[in-house]
Amino acid sequence: MTATLDLLGIPATRKARNAAVYALAAVIPALLGVPALALLAVGAALCVTRVGMPVLSLVLTAVRGLTGVHRAVVRGLLDEDVAAPPRPHPLRAAHDAATWRCAAYAVVNAPLGVLLFVVQLPVRLYGLALLSYPLWFRAVRQNGHDGLELTGTVPLDSRPRALAVAAAGLALLVAAGWAGRRLTALVRLLARTLLAPPPHDLTDRVHDLEETRALAVRDSAATLRRIERDLHDGAQARLIALAMALTRAKEALRAPEPSPADAAKARELVDQSLGTARTALGELRDLVRGIHPPVLDKGLAPALASLRSDIESPSLRVELHSQLLAGPRPPEAVETIAYFCAAELLTNAARHADASRIVVTAHVELELPHRVLVLVVEDDGRGGAPPVPPAQGSSSGLRGLSERVRTVDGTLSLDSPPGGPTRATVRLPFAAVQGETTR
Image 1 (tube, rainbow, N blue to C red):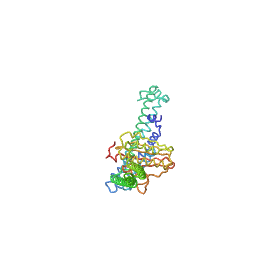
Image 2: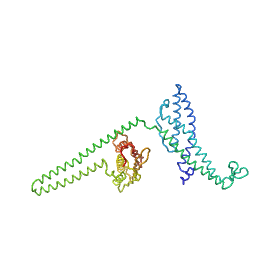
Image 3: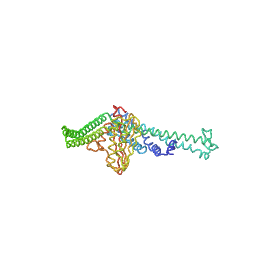
Image 4: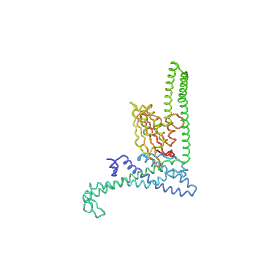
């Protein structure tokens, strides 16, 4: 019902009401963009003098303060949380690109804010008045007849004509609602584009790539050391024991006609060797599974299902929602990282959170110009988990996951208030592994 009223131009939902309130609250800051433009023009004209640049910088600083009001209103009423860019020195604002973008927003938003105000208030009130015309047209008399006149010659004094006016009012309300939604979306877009901090420059990007490359190299070295240690302490020791047992069995059976005691000893050594071989095979399987789980060959959804079956118990229910993974498969590196993240997060929730229900959601979002695999693990445990630690100074599993996802420009965020619930979100873009073809 409320959605239908919104389509008819009558703000009924919270989002539509907030948009209407925003049009009223933002009109004054928007109108201040006009004197801001005049002051910017004066400051630019003074740039031919020595005092021009400091004056222009001070004007830009004041305009930036005005856009701070815009940012607060957009955050409070349109639910668009736009972070403020770093603030330069007031006398150096003319050399800051983010400040110029804030000034552009103040100038562009001046006519946009007025237009949004007109659409949201006067036009809608006029449409409501026309829509209610059949209820009150007989209470108005003009030139000796009931109702108003159209162009001074056509009286709107009959029920059919009043209904036609109401239909026109309804059409006007629908048009005003559509225009208000489009203008509000444009305000959000301008706020995200012009008021947010500038994108990382090339130097920051190079630094980030160097750091993530170092993380990848360190993770690869740690993985190689773990494999070497597991092979040396596990499978290699088992195979050596197997070889020694088989050698002793061979020695026991060396005689042409071994005694019953030697034959029994040989059978015992062979049985022992068989158990050692099985143990070595199990350790090798675990080692291979730690490098690349074979179940991932079937896809991420079956791999997550296998994790669910491993974690689930009578006291812990695990729900898996991965129906949106039916499209083209993500790159192998992305799937592998998502699998290990899910395994670690599920283990943490089962062991430390005292949870009775875990919900795992995996889907692919389109964030132009590339796609992003989003993995969300939420549990109803006691919460209170610390945020993801920084890259240095900690050896926690979450820090390891954070480093691993950063190797593909991914992010790991954790929301765990005391008392729960805990929600971990992993975002893995495909663009960082463009060299791999999706299967």
